[in-house]
Length: 310
Length: 257
Image (cartoon, rainbow over all chains, first blue to last red; front, side, top):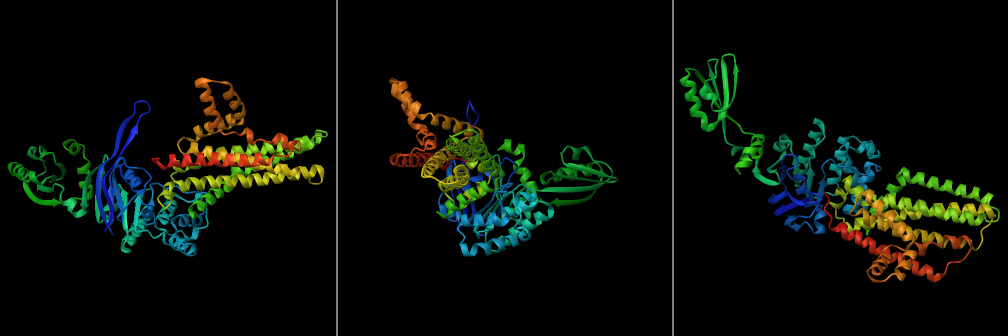
């Protein structure tokens, strides 16, 4: 069974006070996430990631289309018992202690009264907040609040966990801890759908990613497949202390260090580059393929030129 | 129902832990003390003055609490995004509204209870004993609570679609119009045509707080008719239920941006 499915999910806002006009936040989105997957939802700020999450959580209503979680329509109240959600930059009732907040959420999530205390204690231990469980949240740092956010998202043992920018505002150690936590959720067989614009996190954690830009899905798939689809580049290195005009005209990224020069160019320009090196009587040293990263794919999908071409 | 009571008890806990609420209670107690002072300098009418001032203070402070907490019940939760982690759980939107409403009403009832203790203590201080007419005060306090229930429902309704500032303006405006509801009804009876229809509609839409104000008669030790208690209870219940249902309906379709 699929964990998450969207069918032409779309959201258009009306903006303006006097002259109202539509602004499309999410173009028809068709997405399928398998159970047990860690799925990265990537895109720059304003791409429509949070809008998608809000639609899936039932916080907003779609203009068109529909979505299912674990085979149930998102409007079905039974869905909510099986999902956990961490909003971006979460804010909680700061007059409560971490334990009080989680007990409150446990009540709302339908965790049985006799299991509540032990469940809250276990989750606090898991996110490393057991020592400060009796401290009011107004005294918590941003990183600690993020941990509380993660604790409340997994408190009721959901099957699907949605995390909106879970690494946002965390220091490197905090980020590492969240990564470990996502990995452990995967090992428990849970589906994790998380949005981020930190590509290294996505590359390290995700089974699959989707790239969203200006409300439109630009790419989806396994990272290895996506990066292999990026137009290949090669690094050409030669000896001779100069960059011939024939190579400069190719528009590659060239560097000269003493006698050694190198230039990164598109794969299809390789023959022209080698010809230029030979014509200038320079000594060709090496030709090395450059491995495409998720960042390359991301940039390609987001580049204005590509957008215009589309 | 567990979810509604959980939300209500958390709303109550928030109000109790809110220092503004404590300050208001403290200020109300100060008003009670002032009423005692005025009572001592008002020969022969101490009881009347204490009841008048006491009930008016209970009413005004409760009103301020109802409006200022009521207008933030929904909008503050949206603004601070605390609502996101509530509504992403198996909580229906109407349950959230009902829980918030119940929590604030419970806060006001508890608040009124402690203020009532203050008034009765002041009366006991003056007469050194309780009298039968003191029981009429309980009816007046009950009517004050009915007003709080209605104004909380209205504040919640405004909060479900408007900003806190506008909600406060709307709620205060409706309270003031509602206080003069009898005059509005009198005006409606005198006018004809389209204006008459509009006046009648307005007279029946705004809450009739005038009917719930028995402070003057209670201060003069006059009993309140049983039928008035019955009809006022029914009116407040139906009016509040309709307004809360309206808030639920609006909130049910609201996009939380």
